[in-house]
Image 1 (cartoon, rainbow, N blue to C red):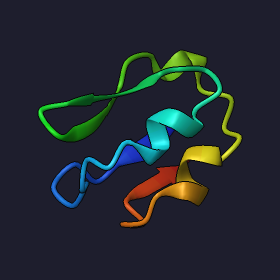
Image 2: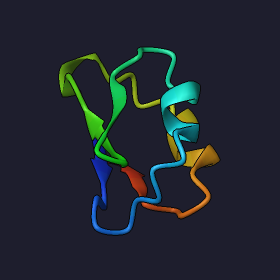
Image 3: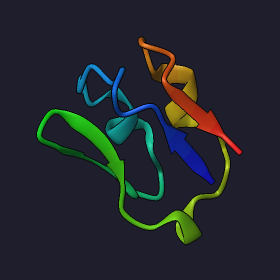
Image 4: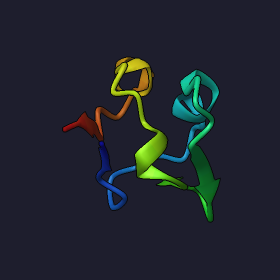
Length: 57
């Protein structure tokens, strides 16, 4: 499961590019999760986030 601190998200899109499952998207300059059930927990999105606002639970 992916948890995003939406208040601190910079909206850079690095995580959306890194997500192999394509479940992350930008909405109004903030990263959102479209379908938690498809998350593989790989951590690729977390590792590229420059603001360190993504957690894999």
